[in-house]
Length: 454
Image 1 (spheres, rainbow, N blue to C red):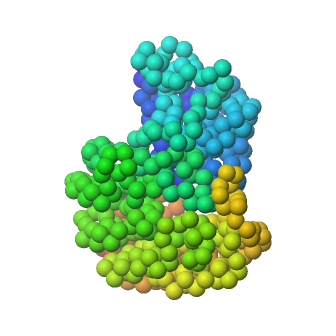
Image 2 (image 1 turned 30 degrees about the horizontal axis):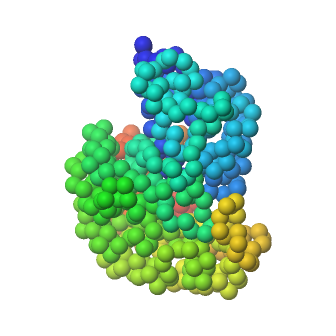
Image 3 (image 1 turned 180 degrees about the vertical axis):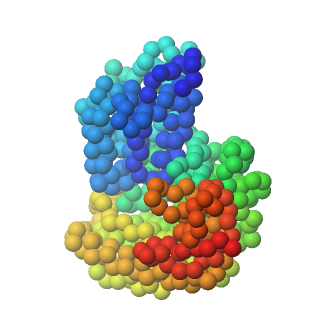
């Protein structure tokens, strides 16, 4: 706590649901509040302010958001409770009616939490800060605009509970896939400038950070706001001294250009690690989803990666049970994935979202069928991951060590994202260091490889 700062003596608590982008944004909000004098509430303490950053990708996410709000208002009676994020953007009136919620902020206001607190708590900040806060019409506790009017890009570069940092380069999406609410929840595609993002990465290097994950909603679409492009961004980031590793988070297959793949293959710091959403291995279903590629393009991308980066980790997103996914269409997906040389599947069951055009598609899939299809793909994923790990037993790699949880062994990840546990006394290991190791065997749960320092 800093004496004399506007909110000195007040305690804040934070809760985040959903994607890594949300966690990164919450971290940035938390830093802004700490800089203004807030102290993070310790376990068991009652906070004066609670900020809840929500998700709304499925109905389950909405329910978890409501549960979190109820729980936190009980645990922090009398706190000023702010709810923001995708659930707050899509259903602000529903959120505002939950007992204990004081303020609902849409996506455009997520970066102005501190200014809204200044308005709520009185003259604690400068007049300039107060002037930047939009008035809340009619005394209602909602500050919100339509998705088409979301224009703010809130910069965020934060370190989570692990060693790596998360650099937000882009927000929003212009794709409007039939099943997805993200364009409505986060607005249109927008981004920071390459110069500003390079500056943030340089600050990470100055803090001693060694790994950055490049994140956003549709990062391959980078450049809509600035007339730049994603390829130029990654080339600029690659030149920053001190950052040893970059990872590209989920990137659409039609935006993962052959030039980007070739660049990763020869780059100094971009890791051989890709996360590519497929969503379905049936071209019929891809058309119903309004995806912008077909299975032939996707297979080309996987083949090119394997050709020039043979040891790359390739994670793939799949949605099962969308409307129109017949039993035959699912079998097409299964066979397509079975034949692909990929590393891991991230499997999601389709959840119907109000306002999406997918609701007009005939052929809903029963919940039991969704479950069975998910389980089949999860088994396939385990088989592929185990095979990928097995191929690397006996090889050497460099691991970036991460802080272990209490009672757990030191662990880290190889460049191609194999999770490694260390077979060495903990006093010889140090977080955020790069360590050459030999991969020797699976751990007891076959969830990681045991490694011995070289």
